[in-house]
Amino acid sequence: MPALVLLGAQWGDEGKGKATDLLGGSVDYVVRYQGGNNAGHTVVVGDQKYALHLLPSGILSPGCTPVIGNGVVVDPSVLLSELSGLNERGVDTSKLLISGNAHIITPYNVTVDKVTERFLGKRRIGTTGRGIGPTYADKINRVGIRVQDLYDESILTQKVEAALDVKNQLLTKLYNRRAIAVDQVVEELLGYAEQIKPYVTDTVLVLNQALEDDKVVLFEGGQGTLLDIDHGTYPFVTSSNPTAGGACTGAGVGPTKISRVIGILKAYTTRVGAGPFPTELFDEDGEALRRIGGERGVTTGRDRRCGWFDAVIARYATRVNGLTDFFLTKLDVLTGWEQIPVCVAYEIDGRRVEELPYSQTDFHHAKPVYETLPGWSEDITKAKSFADLPKNAQNYVKALEEMSGAPISAIGVGPGRDETIEINSFL
Image 1: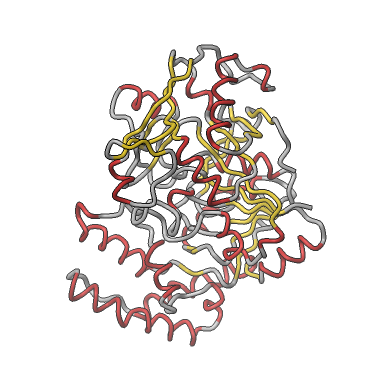
Image 2: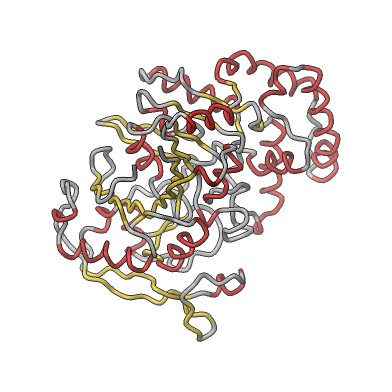
């Protein structure tokens, strides 16, 4: 049975939660393999809307085992709060599994994140301020705290001391903040240990055994391709690898186990935070996309920057992820435009460029080259098949598919779980 990777093919917020939830009823495991509570997913089930930040979307699918992999960074307070909120709404969260090798977001990681962003001023990256970057930095610097460390107080204390040796110097001497007490941090972290212990296990072993037993495993990325630390618009990126390769390292499953890689594409483009965005709109069209699409970050609460569809970054996502399929979301938002521009290339210093430039300077100066496609006015939210869509909507989808380099196998025509047209099965 297949191992599937499902990820964002733009700058995140493409609707991965809806896609994962749609597949969740057909798969046995849904795995978050990177990021932390800086990634928000909105899932609509019937008349209920769920905002997930750290938990895998599969937690809403009965019979599915949700997994937080070793590549994720975990804020225990956020985790427990999210679990409590779902339990209060009658969602069974008892099947959740958490890797003992996942790193913990400590209180000092959050503090460092916030004060650093303020210190940078106009040069700030636009982080969520949730300690994600500093936690990944600690991981790479080998002073990180892992989930398993919560169960050995001596090791935990030693690791917190080692981390704070440097961080307290930074906080007191550069940022003019008070030093953070080691015992206070240790006490807080130990307070979470017993609450999350029932979920902690060797998830690498569990997932590999599941695949050997012909179970279906879905790997769910947070953020999006253009926010990847290696392949995104650096430095305006996240601190991990949302691209397909990150699923292997972030979950401990070899690349030969993965059979399909599905990219989630919004029918237009959005971005949260700072950084280049060639098709960004500053006019009434941009405001209309924001309003109709409900474009506000699930985790950050910030308005998303909006623009027309960018086929250049879609082709790039196909290439760096090895995408086999696209799931096109929010096609319904474009209903009502007489003409819909699509970016097919960039103009950089008078040159036409059809692939994403490797130079950050060139990308900053890129101007979109548009082709205009006819729009439609008919309501498409009740469409159950591709043939139900207005002809112009069909042509729009076909054009995006041709430009992007992989087949569009499903289309979101509304926010609900059942408002999806499935063209080709992902399983």
